[in-house]
Image 1 (cartoon, rainbow, N blue to C red):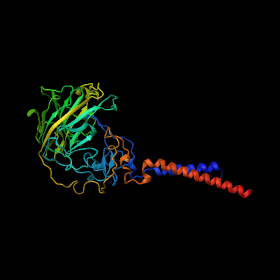
Image 2 (image 1 turned 45 degrees about the vertical axis):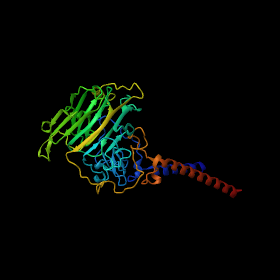
Image 3 (image 1 turned 135 degrees about the vertical axis):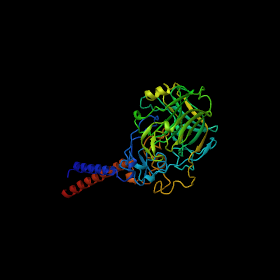
Image 4 (image 1 turned 60 degrees about the horizontal axis):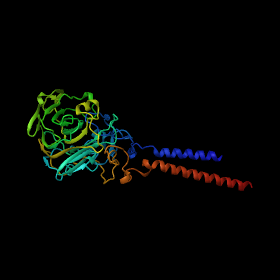
Length: 446
């Protein structure tokens, strides 16, 4: 056979072997190489793609998560406890019980001397170890002078409208409250048009919310609102914005601390500033929903009633969509490259209407991954980016090496170089064999 044909066949064989190696196995954690990025942090009114029930969105094998990476969060699968905690998608995980249950309310008075605060990169899902988490951009959160400080600086990445925009953060409780009183002493950061300071009681799914917001367009005004069943993936044109209230405070909230309180009960909501009621809403006065409420056997009302976390945050509304910018004031002042806006919380006091069970076992028996290990974990969107916690879905190999559940030959970062080396070796072996046979033929006919 002609030498060029031999080499050609060897190269073809090499290509086939390399391709076979790179084909993902449906049940393996080659699910790990998902280059689709997690969505960047967005304003509360923006819409996200709704995942199909029974399918973790970015899991390449399709369907629910595999047993060795059982928890689905933001469309990715992992056995990292962070993925099995808040935001875990039970219907899209290995089993519904792969996700930890909601940790229920505990009375707390936090004055931020030594708070139990974890970033999204270090939170292990245990509400007995941490009272608060930084949900993204942990670099913007600090404890200074016994105060929780959440800052917002200009992001180096323009937003989807091509505009420069500030990147803030959100701090949330690790436990969920269903009715109760929350009081916090706050100095807003809304000293420029566009800057939004927020104190919120929020459940992502089904999307109930009660909030205080101060927008930079007018920092002497408190805006109060409540939403019913508005998950993040809900189209904005379907959200009911008619429950907003605007109350003048006759003081600039960005210059000094004031006490803000939400009293949320089964039959009413009160908003207070400096112990004065500025607004009230009664459940029986809210709009009717579809169906009967099984708890009361009466027509269901469009009244927030789902267990929810308490959150503090700051974000840039002035550089967002036209409607959001008009509401928050625009443009946000980013004339100075080192400009910073900051909301400060002096204390927060939480009194639960339904206190939780103070068990010390976490997670409860039967919940979480069936196989536990100490890491390293496959945590797409959580690791390898210092500026955004939501980002690339690559392995955290730079710090921790290859995930223990992924076989060497299935590690995507090694597929191409391994295939190239094997191909080169086959070419060398083939060439040597051709040269050897030529020599033999010369000796035979000489």
